Amino acid sequence: MSEDVTLVTGATGFVGSAVARTLLERGHRLRLLVRQTSDRRNVADLPVEFVVGDLADPQSMAKALEGVTYLFHVAADYRLWVPDPEVMMRANVEGTRNLMLAAMKAGVKRIVYCSSVAALATAHDGIPATESSPVTEAQIVGAYKRSKYRAEQEVLRLVREEGLPAVIVNPSTPVGPRDIKPTPTGQMILDCATGRMPAYVETGLNIVHVDDVAEGHVLAFERGTIGEKYILGGENLMLGDLFRMVAELAHRRPPRIQLKQSWLYPVAYISEMLAKAFGIQPRVTKEMLDMSKKLMFFSSAKAEQDLGYRPRAARQAVADSVAWFRQHGRGHFSS
Image (cartoon, rainbow, N blue to C red; front, side, top):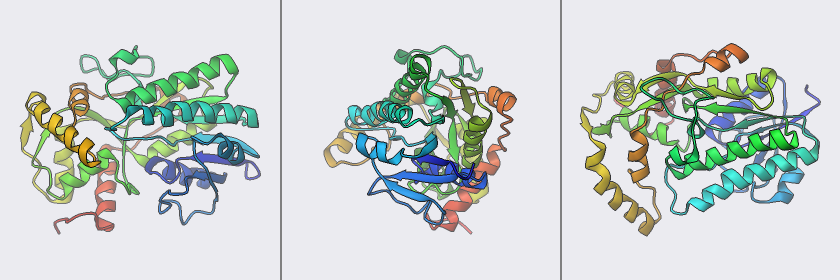
């Protein structure tokens, strides 16, 4: 396999850098598509080829795909709030479509597309959702989730109608090392670990180690079926339980005030108004509150059965996340 070139998009990011590292361990010869402005700290030490390009630029994609045999498309605009949702739609939907079409034109033999559980149904009556749980776009809350749903549907359409050789993976909520931005979930863990979270709104989510998500990508490449979806999740937890776990590992008191969603809608409205006025990310939005009403519980049984996927316990993922933030001086930690 070392003579074949594997292209990875989004490799400077949290999940993408973990995917790149796992592929290198498997002997892949890597080419990484990066933007001119990308922060390369997560991959600076890797023996890889860099090619500068952008999903919005078809010429740069064609150049990046020259001589490529395999493609891992991990890049995405992942923000829980955007002032203009169409910017996110162009990046996540049109960018994905254009890359898939360019890959077919370049003769790429196998593709792993990183979707998200955001594109799937949520838990019903507390029962974790699966890849086949029915969902429509009208049931999906938030611009990011809608963009991932539309992109996934486009990939599935290309598989059916054009013979796109793609396998789809749906990671849940990854945490762990190298979360340099950090991601929205990483920020919550960091805030809790450094005592900056006095209160929270209860909800449910599925926590998975980022390195297990990366392993799942490679297992999908090696063993997955074209056109199939595989949830790459870990452990279903209530948010309060997650924060108590973080606080214990960080030697902090957990947040004790549990707020109701209804109390925070006026705050969200003001927060979004200020965000639009000053070009900052709001701490709470209406969509975040709407999403918190749905339990993001998922089952990885299909990936475990078909791919041999074996995620570690959520506590280990959280411990590695807290340790990485501590080691890299991301806030004040108690001794």
